[in-house]
Image: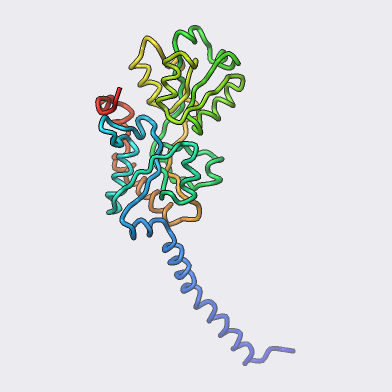
Length: 277
C-alpha cells in the first residue's frame, strides 16, 4: 500500500519529535555523569582525600612526623585551587590501587608511573612528572660488575614491594634474587648493610644516597630503566574528574609551577635538614 500524504506527515512529525529530544537527552546524560563525578563529592564535602605512599622525596615524614615532599606540595596546591581542604591517607604501595578502587580516597598522587597493567584497573591523567629507575649498588659487593653480572642467582636486589622496579628486575635480571620491603628506607638500608648487592628505585633516591654514603654505595651506570611519566590515578568511569585533573596539570605545567617544585625536591638538598637522618 502506498503511503498517503497524512501518513507521511505523521511519520515526519514523529521523526522531528525524536530529533527535538536529542539535545535534552544529551544534556540530561551530561548532568548525570557530572553529578556522579568524584569532583562533585569533593566540592560537596569540602575535602579531597589523597592516597600516598612514603617514598623520598615524593612523600616523607619530617622531624616532627608531618608529611612533606613533592606530592604533598602538589596535593596541597590542587586542594587550594579547588577551594577545599586536603587529607593525605598514607597507604602501603602494594595496596594503594585496591584502596582507591574501594573508595578509601579520591585520587592517588604518589609518583605512580603509567603502565598497561595498572591501567586495566584505574585511569591515569596526563603525566605531571617524569623520572626513571636506576641502580644503587653496594660498592664493595659489586666491584668490577658489568650490567650483565647483575643477572645472577648470586646477586640479591632489594626493592619496594609492588613498585615498578619489581617488574623491571624480573625482565632484565631474571636470574637475580629479589627481596621486597614496604618502604624505600628499608630497601636502601638493606644495601647499605651489605645484605643486598643493589636496589632499584626512582630518582633521586639512588643518587641522593650515593652522595650521602660515597664510601659505601654508588650509582654504577648512567642509565635509567623504563623512564615513564608519573600521573594521578583515579577510578574508572569518571570523565569529569579526568578532564579537571588534566586541565590542572596542563595549567601548572605551562606556568612552570610543577617544574619549579620538582626541581626543589629532586635537584636540590635544601630540604634535607627537615627529615630525620
